[in-house]
Length: 532
Image: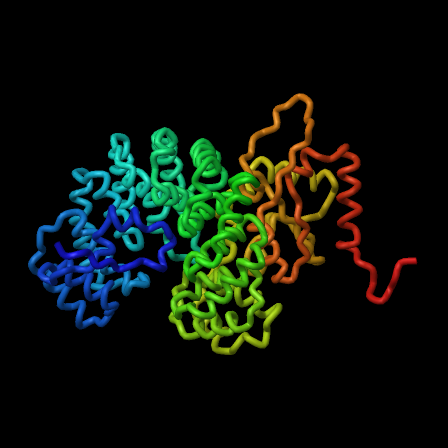
């Protein structure tokens, strides 16, 4: 029997791809013949990377005229071919709306009759363009089917699929996580967690890492992140007991994503993962190095040696289509390598950038303007202006959930008690919002809150005697955000909610220390004047 020819998805967010290849060959197996319309489409799009309208007119006409009977997984393979191009999986929209509508209608009619695996296949393929009603029905069907599922590959991939594949609206910009998807993810993980916990020791390392990678997509709102605590506790226990020592770098990159993007994982787990990665650092490749550096940077400032290795791999391998991922990397790690930054500016300038990618490039622009202004070209600025004219920075505040937490409101009452004339939450010049700010001094306060910005599981302290004192560290993702706001010309005061609310010796001392701290920031000494 002829061996399978795999189209490797090297640019995938998921690095532990063996489960994906085995379970869903329709997205990676190169066609052996071109007899079916589905294989013709896959060959033209994924294998050859052709987007020419004439080539696709033939495919579209044949499909719409003959309307062949296709199985759910054939529908998924066909749709995948229309939404992605080349082995790099570049987002595309091939074949015109009529063909997409035909495929969606065919798939929708079959949803109630699909198996768990068929639903996973459909959700994977239709994720970038399906209508909201289609996704609601598909996810609901999967919710019913997963209850009786026992196959470990399918269970692992279901988590990744549900958390990752959803057609979040790409307009207006900036794009905001869809609350409906967050709610479904919460319900899904509540349903499936007991099964995953029961079988946690049975999963292979690839299956285990696939589950972690799904959790790392942060599809659940941070306000409900405690929903995954029982599962992450079980995963962490098994990691520390036996898995970290034997996992591959790809596995570790997915595990790091699962814990660090959610501000979870003990110091012991962090040190264990970092130590194993340092042992294997010579095995890094371009894709897992960048992903690992990004995941690490969510929790701590990334290790310098890892950054040096990653920078070298980026310079050797960065492709023209990688500008978004490398832009995030440059800002998150405060990249100082001018060769990388110059190439990044060139790549961005030469692309027809989708509107929804503007927010990441905008941060890169401010970072370059502050530290590497000589690298910013007129062409780069023009490209941004053409893309970002619909950007509405006020959406960040409008759809924020952190400003509705009890911790936020409690801190705000404290500021009012101290008679501080702050404005907040405060949107600034169509860029982003601050928790609070003094104007016109341009001094802002950002509050690191439980679940959102503090590392570790958050539990209310119900002890009668509050000793020993608790200490929650602030995640580096919060520091990255504060530094971005400082690029807008503000001085940012970082406040740790847990330290302010729990660990002061007395409220009077806490209040005095805060007022003494902010006084010189709000009323700086005149230039040239020195204290006696």
